[in-house]
Image (tube, rainbow, N blue to C red; front, side, top):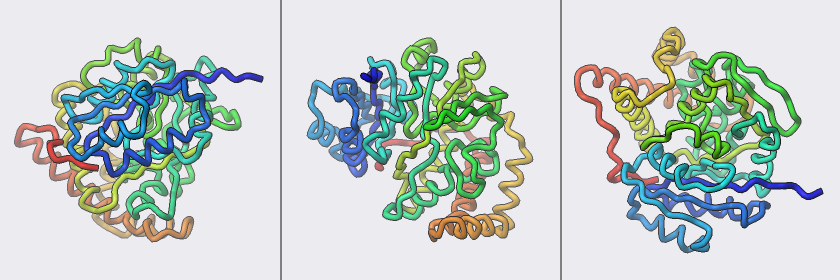
Length: 344
């Protein structure tokens, strides 16, 4: 029986991504998927490290579009990429993502045969012993921001809780994927990044401006009753970072960018409705140290990887960075994190 594979636009924002983009592209090029049905849309924020040269060396010029990202951020890059994509399905893949096997794209597009499903996303982050300790920690935890563990709004399998999220949802098991819908549009997981696929005609119904905030799109879909998402039983590799200084830099960028865009009224998802008690529990658990150390030990007994013991450090660093920048925002104007010397 001949299978009708949908056409896919792979949208990849880049900014000084030469260290990782090659492995990302190799994993996509090896896919067991009709090559004529894959187009690449790169949106570059002004790389100076040879990122664009590497892209050109790996791909036929007829297979990709290279667009400028004048605003430089990943969210701006996604917006530009989506506007230039031409295929049925848009795959938002970051430059530091690696597809774990050659059947990944087929498995991720399979759920779209169900017309109710508007998007798909991997169920877990792939854990590899060869990756850096921070990347391994994030894969095991199922999130890049430890605050999400207390919020319960993570969107990948967490080895500590044995769940992919704690957000209330309706789930139907279709064998190779779960068909998910959410009970409350104001309480949804952080879905939308690192291997997220969505129908282009769904995105076209929204007024995409200069920025595309993934969770805001999911929020809009949930509000309009169209939020049926497939959580596919596969993973994706996310080379989050190698060093503690990079982790701090990314956490700083996350909180500063959120405060900046939120102050401009550009964010739709009501983050202010997150239960303050959960946030307080994160703060107290981190300050007391014993609870987060217990979590790290519990994780180690489940999967013997010393990367678990970065957990108390990650929580402390996150608390300090988020706390300092939140207090600072009360007394001075918030600025977006500078991308001038950003490198992956």
